[in-house]
Image 1: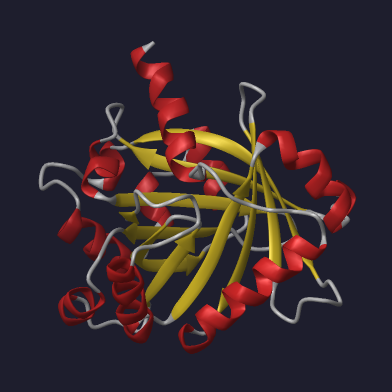
Image 2: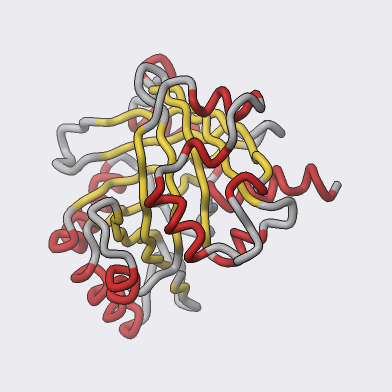
Length: 256
């Protein structure tokens, strides 16, 4: 991830140039921002968030107890989604889009830039839809972890993970309960999503995101910021990472 010593939300000219080049090579751009804890009640009211309108999810991560995958930039995740099939993903970040596309010629590979106040990161992911009970069975110990991942995903994992690790060697980290709500505000033409991550210790992260085509990323970012300001929300300051927070929390259970 590229970060900046500039004030929160501002990138240097060099970083802006890097971001522009990355968006030219990416399949999509996702604008993300986490709402500070003190601002969460205001955001819930301003955006009309309602848990009864949200989609319920359970998110599991798989790593070693000391997060060896995370140190390599590899994320292995699986989700249960109410009313839909489960899904799984193997993700690598940060990546150079040219290098990863050359190494993995696959229609299943998606390159995305995540941009947030003060920084950005480019990732490559392979995602798959699986059966509605598959993740539950893995969590219960009645199905092997590798069964959640296609042969392509397994190959992508082996290429990027430490050579001595297999998917079935990983420990389960989770679940995290997530409430996801799609928003359709009249003043904002883009796609806006709110996700509330509920951690077992009672802590929460509220993230707002908007995915767009690479060519419109800068315009959409300006429109999103203007929309949030009109709603009385100024998102800046330290940004929390949902995945890192989850991994560190559950890894602490092994070391604590």
